[in-house]
Length: 144
Image (cartoon, rainbow, N blue to C red; front, side):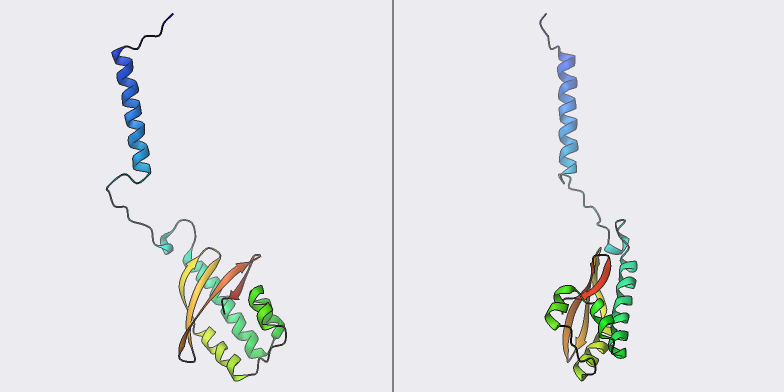
């Protein structure tokens, strides 16, 4: 038995292929319509305000640790790479460290993403950029 393609069958297959190609081209950005992108604070994937609130609490804890002279508390809130660079013995009474604490207390968030929030502040007349990153489930200071 031979399979015959009639005109009706050919037309329905052709329309199906055309519809599929239009669907694929629109999914790949083939459309000329401009779509409005969601701002990070409006993203359904994460809550930017909550990230900033959580990380600002970390900067507050760091400043409190510096002011109290609590090296262990300070080191527990610093990213491992930075902790290895600065070592275990810190002079938390030095004027430079006190100035750093002031700068951290005044830092403003610049960008927030899941797992990391970038900050900027002024230190010694220059802009200091750093981040608070989630390291093994805990927010820690990094990028100094």
